[in-house]
Image (cartoon, rainbow, N blue to C red; front, top):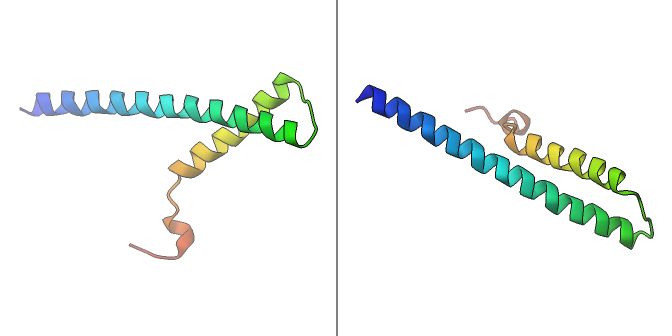
Length: 78
């Protein structure tokens, strides 16, 4: 049964990676919308490449910050 358990862990890891990728793409699209609306509210009309760049930086920062363990910042040791 060890081989089947290993195969199950591999399949679940692949599925989890696919779901994480889909959420990252969704997060990027939402961030593009927010940056575009925010620029419009501020009276700016930046070109599409600057909107895409700023959305990519913000989405990447959010994804990295969400995956980083924050227990080291809280001062609580487990």
